[in-house]
Amino acid sequence: MSTFLDDTDTESNFGDVPLILTPSTKSSLIPCVLCGLPIISNSANQCAACLRQQFDLKAHLHSTRGTAQELHIFRCKRCLRYQSPSNEKHYEFHEEEAPELLTMCLKAIPALQMKGQATGIKITLLDAGFIWTEPHSMRIKLKLTVKAEILELGNLALQQRVGVELFVRNRQCQDCQKEFQNQTWMGKVQLRQKRTDGLKKGLAVVEANIANSSEIRKHIYNLETCRNGFDFYFSTISHATQFVAFLGQITPLRTSVTRKFISTDNHSNTANIKQTFVCDMVPLSKDDLVVCSKAGVGAGKLKGRLGLVTRVSSWIHLVNAAPSRVSLESADLTSDNYFKNEKNYVIMLSSKRLTKFVVMEIEILDNNISDTSDNSSHRLAEVTVVKDSDYNKNFFTTTHLGNILSHGDEVLGYDLKTGTDDEFDDHFVNGFELPDVVLVRKIGGLGKGGVGGEEPNLDLVIEKEKEKTTKRFRRKKKGVSDEENSGGGHRGAKKQAAFETSLKNMGILDNEEEEIGDEIETT
Image 1 (cartoon, one colour):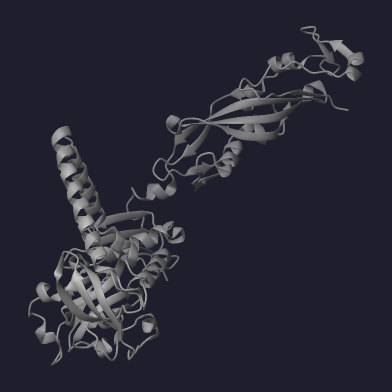
Image 2 (cartoon, rainbow, N blue to C red):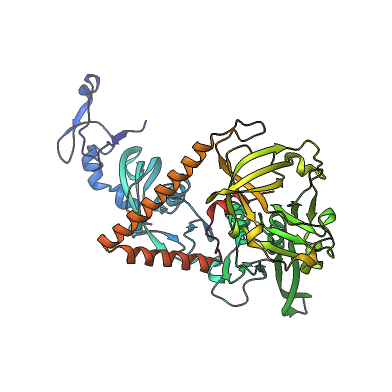
């Protein structure tokens, strides 16, 4: 029968706690051969404190085959992944104090992997946990509860709680090494979106979808930004092909492939070839007001009319921005139809030119017709609106937002009466007249948000707008006073300039965050 000595405690010094004896064990007590303390008889005839001094388990855990050394765990400095102790080519990312990181650290302790033949002590792990350290200390501390079987003393077992310290060393992984070597990438995807107004909403949508897809993101080992898009690098051509298919589900693309011959092996009949995928995004974004020329192909019933982009995915959905009282036309524009007739689709106004309006009156039209199933949520209505900044002038228009608008709602739209000229007249069919206002989307309101809303109190609407103007003026005046008194205006301007520079380097020049959030479409 083996003798077991428990020398653990809950203190941070890994304890000197005297052995607690029961009356039934007092008759079998003997003095320790070293200190004379009464103990229960064991094969060593020593107390736990003397055994701990003679057999230092902490030093044993920090040694390899009896030689004391520092314990290390390696991490790539660039990607912050840890090297697996069992496989030097395998790296994994773990959060601080994660259970997976604890498992990896325990595998890095050689004494826990040995069976005791070389040192005469067989160690069994009973419990393990982290001791908090500063994240930048490059150290990982563990609190272990171990049971050691001392072979030279027969069946004597000693249990202790000890602390183990591992040093985190930097070692670059193979994936990061490839980025600093020539001829490492095999597939490259060049994503571009070219617009004359510099709006990069489409690229922001792609970036958000990539950030939400870890399965796609893990194959990208390098990324470069340029003026009109991004360059993605992949280690295999198959990963680049999968990425191009992923982009095709987010936005319409025109893709072309170029190949570069690197080397060949005549003996094995193989060749090293690099492929570059050039992906041109359709420059149309959500909420764009598009002129569909009468000479174009693919616009359907919108040919020679004005279209509004309501959705962008693998195709572009357009609705008639100037519908009649009878029907609401729509069209689905593919990338092939667009690039074959690129000159026949002209952006009249983009979301930068959106103006806020307030709904004064609305009349639902019952004789509306939907061409596609996507139009089932649209309903024709005649609306009277006024500008948010000028309540003295009314605008009358027919819109497709009749199902969500009510009296007093705030909507964004385009003012075509003061914001356009006659340069697009040749693109329209005979008899087409531009509306004064094109409503794009609802942003808020005082009504119930649907058909049959209650009549608003116009005095309340005007009073609300006055309060907004007063608060805006007070904030502006207060900001000027703070800048004059504290002198902090220069620092704030520098921070703002640095922030805008970062946005330009990332290729995202759109400052309207709410518009970017509304445009994210996942399929």
